[in-house]
Length: 317
DNA sequence: GCGAGGGTTCCATTGCTCCC
DNA sequence: GGGAGCAATGGAACCCTCGC
Image 1 (cartoon, rainbow, N blue to C red):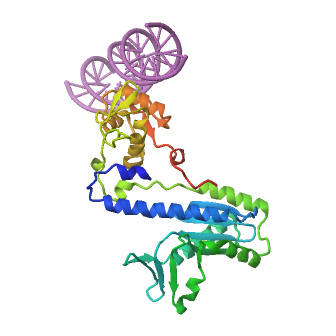
Image 2: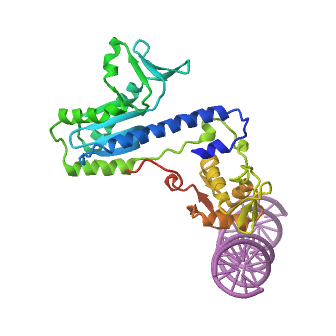
Image 3: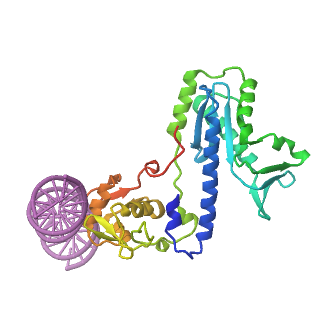
């Protein structure tokens, strides 16, 4: 996710928004890593854990942070890594976060998890014609967070856990649903279907932030002085400012274009983006990256590679 | 300094669109 | 329909870098 952070001018009007969003995503990522660590201590091989599932259903998608599947039940975990004091306001059905003397409002995560439960249930019925008990929890992975709930919001409180309580909660659910409802074979079929239907989300970041593609800095960035003026000199990239060399400096720039501007790139578009005149040099660079390509001759188009080849991804099933 | 490997340059070819 | 123009690729020759 770091690439978007680097491609806008320091004083760009959207920079603050993007940095804030990046912080949220990082917090979420670290929270899920923390969750993984706790789940790894369960040592229960009847449980199958899925991360960041995104499933199509009736023309839309629904997303589940973590899904734990067993022959006895399914458990949805909505993972939050929010620092500060969290207050649940049942009157206005919202979550208030107090942090650094600032108040911030969030949508009620219980509604989100409850909706996921409903959709997962429908998905199971549609694909396998079966119904299993589905539980859900909101798991807060930030140890320093204080959760406050008034007496009337006790039902909400029961659905929110600190990470340390998660394994205990899972053991309680296992005891609650002691009877196996689906066979090992059915469980395997469901797991395979989940993996098959999982669709990665590639947001169009420029559309989301309403940034024209002309605002993206062109050129190849020097990894030493961070300038965008590296020149191609006999198989390597040379920075005219600090004289640093980097054979692979173009890779990040091409990926930036594929992930920020368009999922495809032509030889000409790549020349414009890298500020190179030679179509042959660009052809060699694009081919050396083993990017998926379609068309031939003048209509050769290079495509965005699978994200997992370049980023650490948690969606390993 | 030499040689191997790999990158660049140049040119021919291909395939498509546009215009007459 | 045919020629001109354009954009991209492939291949050959040349050139540069790097390791020994």
